[in-house]
Structure formats: C-alpha cells, structure tokens
Image (cartoon, rainbow, N blue to C red; front, side, top):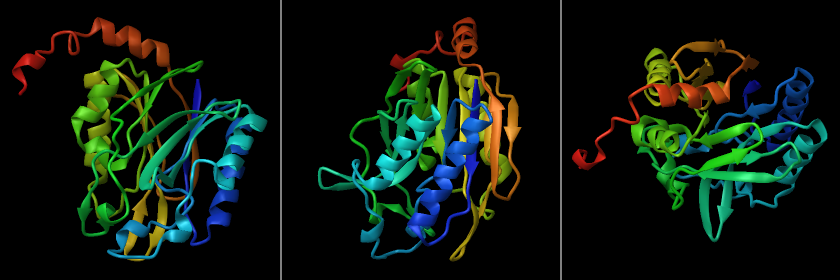
Length: 265
C-alpha cells in the first residue's frame, strides 16, 4: 500500500497548521495513499524547547474541533491518518498520536512513554508519561503501531510492538540539524531489520527559536532497506510498503523466536 509522510514546516498559528494538515490529507488521498503520517505536535510550534512557557492555548481534548476536523477530512477523502497533538485527558496532558481510519473514527491512541528533560527538549515540563504501554491496532490495512519521537531510542518500544504483531510502526518526531541525522536513520533501519517490521518516521522542517528541524523523514522496510527518504524542505513523501510480507519474513527469521527473555533481567 501507499503511505504518505507530511514533512511540514509549522507556524505559530494553530489554524494555519491545521489548514495545511487538511490540505496534505487531501493531496495524499489524491495521490493514492492509504495512510498519512504527520510530525510531532503538528498543530503548534515546538514549545518544549522552552523551559517554562504558557501553552494553555495549545492544549486540546479528544473532541476538539481540530481533531474532529481531521477526522472529517479522513472520512471525506477515504484515508487513514496519524496526527500527533498535545492532548489533555483525565486532567493530564500528553504528547499523543492518534490513528484515524478512513471512516473518520479514532481507532488508536499512543501517548509518549519516555519523557525527555534536557536542553531544547524540556518535555517533562509539559507532558505526563503514558500509562498504556505500546499497543498494536488491528485495521483493514494491517497491524499498525505508533512510537512517539523519543520513545524510539528505547529498543524495547519497537520490540514490544513487533512482539505483538505490528507490521508497520509510525514515528512522529522533531529531529534537529544539531542531532546525528545519519545515526538516527540507521537506528530506524537496524530496528526494522532486527524486528522484521516496516518503520516510517516523519519529521518537522524549518527554524523555530534556537532549533532548526532537519527533515529527512524516512521509511525503512522490514529488511532494513531505505525505501524512501525526504530532503530538508517541506515535502509530501509518498512510497509503497508491504505489511503482510513483514509478518511472513519475521516468521522466517530466527531473531524473535530465539529470544531468551528469562536471561535478560
């Protein structure tokens, strides 16, 4: 199937970012994509780079008009989407990705589990960690899971979803030009190979405050092969992935079946 990665440049205005997201959903559908993945916190500036900001205007709930609008766009254009937004739920605020099906229904939610707290990534100031772990969502496209940005640096995240049968893992992220881009690409490719799973990572672009986001969104297949990679500017990256072959190949490889978890503690 075709998937699209919406490598976006964000503005300070949520409405502008929202309208751009809707346009990209429409464009992806017109180009034959079955699913579109967005970068981390796609409707807002990257506020976690600041130690203590008033971001109350950025907080949404699951029934926010912006969320409902993305759901409508999925239904209208008959496409799945995975937006990543700043959501309040049960009095706690999360960095959360949604999986919305082509009927406009939310069929999956993934909150960030590991929360960074370092220069330019003061995320513990704004986000609570997930209590829900790493679920895998059964869809008519296949078994899809999500790993939110920083969580990908923990091999247990992708491994857990692979053990639960994920065929495609989506990663919204906010990587900068100051970080090791090539290393991050290899990190995705190696985990895809070791776990026999397709992985798509979608990044931001543009300069915000002291941060310059590097783009280079990437899709690796279940063999660890780069099947598509974007440049450093805004781009709608579209490529093919094969979900069912990931499961077939994973069953043939010994990596998962020969694990010795009783020796890992």
